[in-house]
Length: 127
Image (cartoon, rainbow, N blue to C red; front, side, top):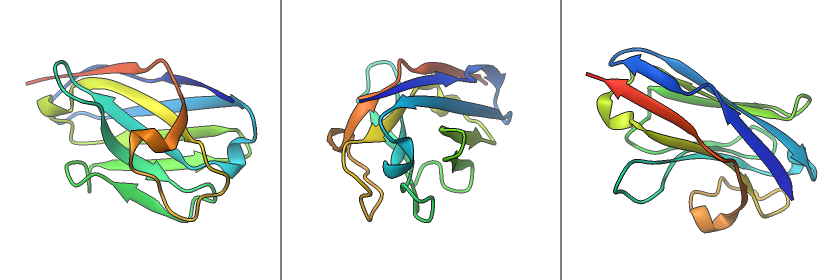
């Protein structure tokens, strides 16, 4: 099991930026792909970005391409999500998640592929 703690959320104006961080502890972080998901009020949780265990493969939802950047530091057991050009529709709770598979060769994009989740961090974008 991996314990995950997100931080960095907040209230920002449209066009602003935030950097979300996720600190991991527990089973080997470096062998798991990591993902960021978000859930807006009244909507299903959706995939935002994911990065393979090695960091060599990255995937983004179409809605965030060019604005969001995911990265990981296996030495520090952290994964980050840089969010630029924020829009009101980016308002949601953002969750960090760890893949249930060992060294999956591709980036998982489905929530059922992730075994461990953080408690979430709120991002609110005002227009």
